[in-house]
Length: 315
Image (cartoon, rainbow, N blue to C red; front, side, top):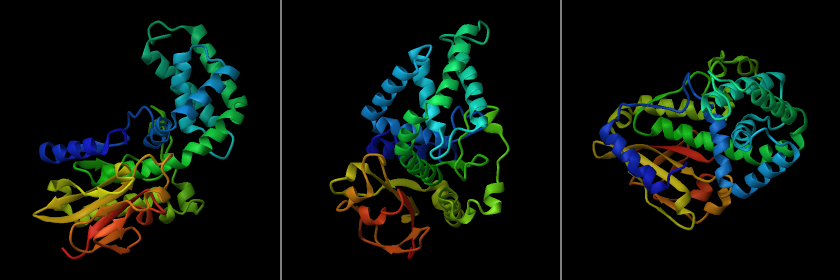
């Protein structure tokens, strides 16, 4: 999350008062970079020195036609670069389409109405060179940031689904997706791997989170439609890296979430000793179903996931 925790809570509290039924979206038909791509790219801000080193190494080995364009496109390439396998042919064509649109719309080196064919050709050649020869630099870095990117994605999705507003889960974003821009983000959703069992839908972490959050919304319509956003007290050494809130309705708490921030640089173990103070009552942790109450150690609670949803059992 780009905001400080206090600023986030203030913004959500104001939203609950001013526009509780406004739409919230992480992806749309016009998304320039899909929500999971952005979630991975956002990790770069947590690792500025490592990112700067990668940029220097890439530019030294593969000089781009312009550093500003290369810097921007390198972020996108890191955002979609496969964690395990070599880049597929479809990624090559998608990156070329993305680069052409992005560079022309930026209108710095080329435009839709005044195209610089030499610059565009050089940029496409640079992308091809990275795809063909840049794996030794890019793949280790992507393996470093990808897990934190997935954590960021889960935290963002939980925040979207439980914060004030009416969420739009755009097609395919209930599982991992790597869309860039139209027509890329208007591709048909490929559900076949989920149907065939290659990725068990019921066990997919993002799908599981979305399913549970939507079930909570259905079971608590008043809290979701008109509930206030109330931060939960957090104390301890890692308190500034915890996002915890409930949605309060008719004087009683109903649902909420607890999450970690800066997932690339602050591990779950560093939250041991940091506590969230829950409102009175017993709370069910979703989706695992365990019960918590009183002061809860964040390190233990979020040992296996960067975010949990909570529901009051005895309201």
